[in-house]
Length: 107
Image (cartoon, rainbow, N blue to C red; front, side, top):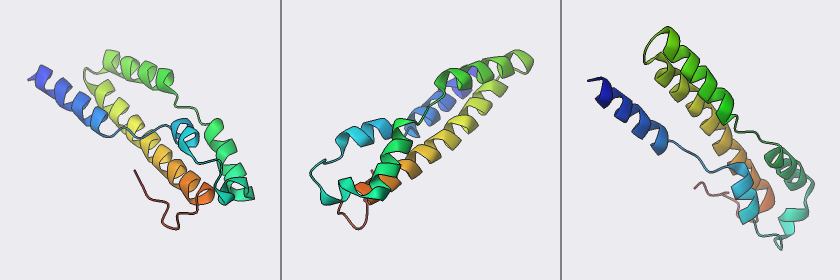
């Protein structure tokens, strides 16, 4: 039972991963006229400074596992979800500010 829960949590975490903003930044077309705009420069600055904090999340999850078994899995999932939401939001802002695509398509 415990193994099944761990595998389910790992699959859930892997399925919810968002693209890193630095990766999105690298994929942008630098020749697009919107790339030089003030909004794009601000979004690029924010993406360049984005920290995924993977080590901090891992330490918190391991510490929670020591206190209550499997609580670290839940804590890691929640922290990962919050971070992935922030990644998606920043990626959407990057695409919206730095490309001529009016919909700033989500990936």
